[in-house]
Every structure is written in structure tokens, then in C-alpha cells.
Image (cartoon, rainbow, N blue to C red; front, side):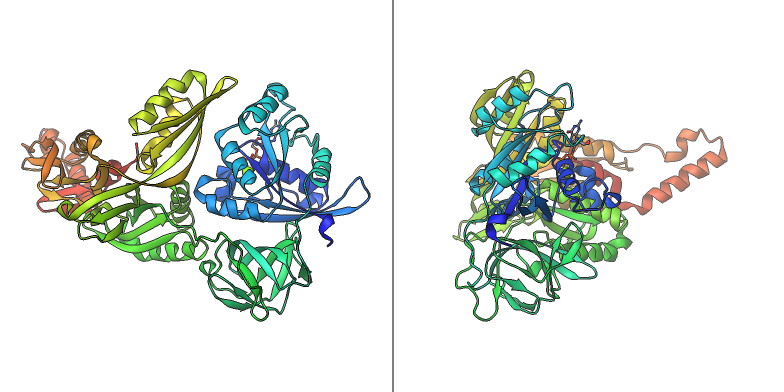
Length: 598
Ligand code: GDP
Ligand code: MG
């Protein structure tokens, strides 16, 4: 296809503002899918994506559009991951297209993810067409929202397209705007050596790894021997095609085009997002700039509740890792929880998605230990280490200082909740960077420790604002702070699974809360059990679980024998799930509850 007849674009929006519905309408109106094959949310493939309304893997679809100027255009829509956890992938896939539709719900206005996503589009030098959606609803306030887009984002919204993705109103105007207001691909030479950007890849059990690429220069064809410039792998291309949205083979993909290739690639790990694909012989000289592999920033332990399911868990984790290069894992053993895995994720949502999939698709009940960020530990002997697990924290006497990751958090909130939000951020060691007003909403920007956010920040934010706040963040770097490892001791035995890194100033508070919780969760024994929180050798909080005076059946008043039997049986069943700590037995349940992020 001639470059001037190609338009590559993405849709950026806050969750629920109508991105998927609009994509469906564009596909439907251009007859890309026969009416009878139309089902909602064509692009959201995985169940979990549909349920949560998020996209994890980039999807693409090619639409042929006969425009009002009499020419037929090829429109390539890339549906980019819509979440901060995947921001590197988002920024890569944004670079594969030249324009964006900025969808804003006209009943809601600009939200935190609208901003985060549109800034990515601006960074990628996109032409942006604002689209105001849901104008079929009486609450739609087109003028106010257009003004807000101009004030907050700073782009012209005077010719925003007004639509209802639901009823189909305005969709023809969106298609025309794509052709007339977005630019065709810049440059690109057919005769040059092949240079294609690897946008994303996914594992298909029939085809192996399917790679989505955007061709910059040259031509990609079946039978070529290609090389991934960063990872070095070479492969024979056995299929080249486009999504319509069903996979459809094509003879070739030329400059400016977006499609997929398969080449008997075994694992997604060999296909890094942002890598450059070229031919093995006479390939291009330099890879595309700016490549960086995504690295996990949040770690936690995953253990099977039923320890006999350990091998099943290994199997599940290996399979999931096949399709997700940014998910890391290694075996971990814990005195409290047995055998499991220490897993690394791009963020909390990524963690939740993987955990959900293991539980649902593989039917394994999991214990998740408290998520921890990656700390940088600088030792007195000049060495440096990354700490993924608080249990591995070296002795403090050898530590020079510790640095923790900090984020820039953007929060949009209605005025009436502003005070609560500021207090929450302050409580979490936040430093205010900015605060602006747009209509009756405030936008606050905070520099916060990621550690304080992975815990329960998002839930707290939702609850203090009755669900009205929206939140987004990006990691800005590492900074030194007074951080310590807090241990929990039950009957003087340290319980590794409950160790956490905390700021020295809030250690007492956290320690007290943990001890109080455990006191309720651990059953009484025939002896007194001290429950302590400690830093180094120093106890900072303490509770005592008093001894059990009489045996458990005593409350049956010696009467009903069957009741007594039942009670003993129950006790026995409970025993199986107990973990022994020195002389103390702690039920599995206690760990699960103590580690719950609430
Ligand atoms: P996404 O999260 O941005 O992909 O949003 P969806 O496309 O999944 O839409 C979120 C919800 O808004 C769904 O329940 C849609 O049916 C609804 N919705 C989308 N567009 C419109 C619209 O134009 N009008 C109305 N009334 N509802 C819409
Ligand atoms: Mg969606």
C-alpha cells in the first residue's frame, strides 16, 4: 500500500470511557467483520482483560476504509495496554503509530489515566484527535469537557468529534477525521534493508509465538531469514499476515504497515518489545533507538495453600512465563509457607493478573506474601545489591545505606475529597509536587515511595473518595531513606514470611498493628506466647497470647458426646493446616490474614 493511503493510530482513554466500544464500532462500520460474527469487545481477547476492561497485550486490527475523497485507506488500529504497569510497552506501541484518538467520556471528563495515556501519545509526537463519547447520555456536558481538555491537557478541542460509541452516532465522522486529520507514516523506503519494530508478541498453542511488527523500511515476506537485533535470535519467517481481526495471511508487509509474523519462535522471551527485526543477511545497520527491557519492580512470594500442589504451581508459572517476558520467578522456601516461588512483576495490577490466572485457569489456591519493592542496598565494603525479598536483608551493621524506588503519582479528585487525599498522601511520606484545579476537580501530583503504594494505597484512595478519585503513576528513580527490616517473632522464633521493609518512623505503628492482628489469629496454647516485632535485635512492639487453661472440650460441659467428638475432629482437621514454629503451631489461615493488604 502507498504510504499516503495508510493511517496508523491508537485510541487513548481512561478506563470505561468507551475505547473498546469505539474500536468495535469502527470495525463494524467498515465491514471488517461480517455482522453475524460481531460480538462485543473484539479486541479484548483474554477473559481477564474483558472482565477488568484492561488490555495487557497490544492488539492490532486492519480496517479498509473507503473515504469520502473516493480513495480506500488502510487504517491500522493498535490497541495498546492501558495500564501504568505496562507503561514501557505502551510507550513502544505508541511509537509504532503516528496518531491517536483521545476518547473522553463527556459525562465524566478528563481522568488520571486520560492524562497518563495522552502524555505518552504526545511524547511519541502523535497528532491527536479529541473524541467526546457518550453524548447520548443526558449528563453529557460537551462544552465543559472540551474546555477541560484544553485547560488540563493543553490541546485544542474546538473541533473535537462528538460521538456515541453505543448508538453509532458520529462514527462516520471519526473515520473521516482519521483520514483527514492524522498524518500518513513518515518516510519509509521499500528498497532499504528491512527494519521493523517489534510491538508485542504472544504465545499461541498452535502457531508458537506470534509477533506484531510495524515495518519502518524494506519489506517483510514469508521465507525470509530474520534476525532480532537485540536478542540476536535468527528465524525463518513462515507466515506474514494482518488481523482483520481474524488472522489473515498476506504476501508481504511494506513500509508503514502493521501486521504479524510467525517463525517457529519457541518462547515470548526471545521476542522483546521494542527490539528491531531485520533480515539476517544484508540487514539494516543500526537498531531502533531507545530499547530497554521491562524489569520487574514489585516482588512477592506465591505459595500453594495445599503444599501437594507445588508441582502444579511450577507448571502454571512456567506456562505463564512463556507468554510474558516481564514476569520473573525463582523458587523460594519459607519455614512458614513451605515451597513456593518468589515472583517479580511490573506492578500491582500485573501481580493481580498473574495471581488470578493461576487461581482460575490452573485451579490452584494461593497464598500471596506481602508485596515488596526492589531496594538498592549499599554495603559498607562498597558493594551493592538489589533486595527482592526482605528475608534476605543483610545485617544492618554491614549496611551503608538503602535506597527505595519513588513514583510520581497523579491523582484527579472532586474538590470535596481533596483534604482526605492530601492527608493520605502525607501519611504515606508523600511530597507534594503540584496542585491545579480544572472545574470542580483538582489534580494533585505527589512524589511518593512506591513501597507505600504497593501496600494498600489504591484501596484507601478509593475508599476515602467514595470511588471518585482516579490515580496513575510512573517510577521516577531511587532515593535514600531511613529504611529498616522489621521481623516478627512468635515465641521468640522469627517468622520469615512476615518480614517487611518499613520506614523507621512508622515501624512502631506497623509492628503494633501486626502483633495485634496475630494475637487474634494464633490459637492459644497450653503456655504463654509472646508475639513481637523487632528491628535488628530490638523489640519495638509486643503482645502476649495468654495460655489456655482448660482443654478445648471443657466448654461442652461434659455433656453431649457427639458434640465433643465433632469438636475434636474439627481440631484434628485444623491441625493438618498448621505450621510448627518451635513449640507453637500457627494455622495457615493466620498467615493469609496477617498478610492481607488491608
Ligand atoms: P473502555 O474501558 O474504555 O474499553 O470502555 P468500554 O468500551 O468497555 O465501555 C465502558 C462502558 O461504557 C460499557 O458499559 C459501554 O457499554 C459503555 N459505553 C461506551 N460508549 C458508550 C456511549 O457512547 N454511550 C453510552 N451510554 N454508554 C457507552
Ligand atoms: Mg476496553
